[in-house]
Image 1 (cartoon, rainbow, N blue to C red):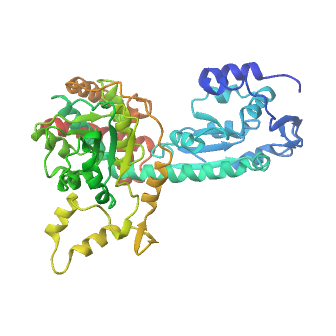
Image 2 (tube, rainbow, N blue to C red; image 1 turned 45 degrees about the horizontal axis):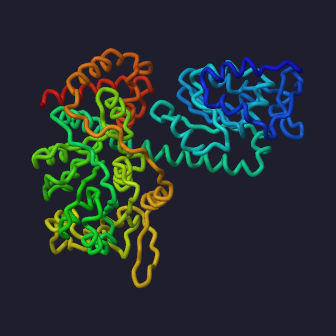
Length: 514
């Protein structure tokens, strides 16, 4: 058993996973894999530290059947430990399945390439990623590969001897898998809720962009960017903002915009990523010609129309929606990261993209501080003011807003702060903000909507009978997540066909209304 498979394995790896192959040259640590042993049925089994076989030496077929219980079509599996790869081959024989392979580190993986033939696995397009436990953002990379609307059945299948050999790294693996499920489930839930609205908004905003787009702001030397969120603490920042007004560039989040205006502060930029129609209320005070209106393509078209009515060309940005990214390949669109799911960090990213290096947050409480949901002067003040009566006083309306989901109370001196899981997740995100390069696209000019729509419609129509092989499949996935909630029992491909047809209907309906 001295034959080496390294060269053939490495060649296949280099073809599909060049970044993984690139780290192997410098892999010189202690390997988890040590050698080979032959089983009772003649099968060759890799051994781990202490000469422990990674598979059963008695009946590997029975072990494989047990491991793959619960898998089937449309499954997505994270395989912890590759071993001989036989259990992975059996899994991949089922159509519609996909997987990610996880090994402890490059040194262990390099040794394994020498021991067993794995080139067929690396060449299989259903193997989406090969990831090491010591990789940064392990959970995030796995989450990127798992698309629930295509693979609703998520499983983690780890070889028991491999898990036992991880020692302290086992905690990293277990926690990463929990984070994958939590983050992807939350993201899918949002897609299922907003998928249709996002699609409609993107097409509608691109049509408005064809009439002309504003220019993305560029940092002024010596100025500090202020990201103004609408938390209660914004009120305490007002006087200081007024004193510093000439030295700061204020990016107002949509909810904070009217609050700042009520205090006599005119923001330099208004930022929104909100897809819901009621977000039109964010601009109920109107927009000043001096204010840049920066809108993610998924944002409500009601805001876009409000800006246009105020004589302002909106600055449309490309965020994380796949249809927006596809549109950016047709015509230039400034970038603004919306992956946090909250406008505060989208505005922070916009400031970075504008070239600001000195950026401050204000009003970003990530809690209902002092028992208040927002600073005074938001659009909610106006709405609640109209709804107040003797049966629903002002305070009751705010309490209903704050306590619509489960909260945790924390005493803060004589006051009480209320926290929710969502607000806590935003607070955690704030600790992981990263530097972003300055914008390379500053304006979209008159965006080529007609050419884009003509070809996009043609591709949807051509591929709707075979959507899994369509090059525009990704652009429809959030819409398919929305549609899946309405057609729960539909098979994956059938749901995609329905979603392609829905996309065509939305485009047709929109163009007719124009």
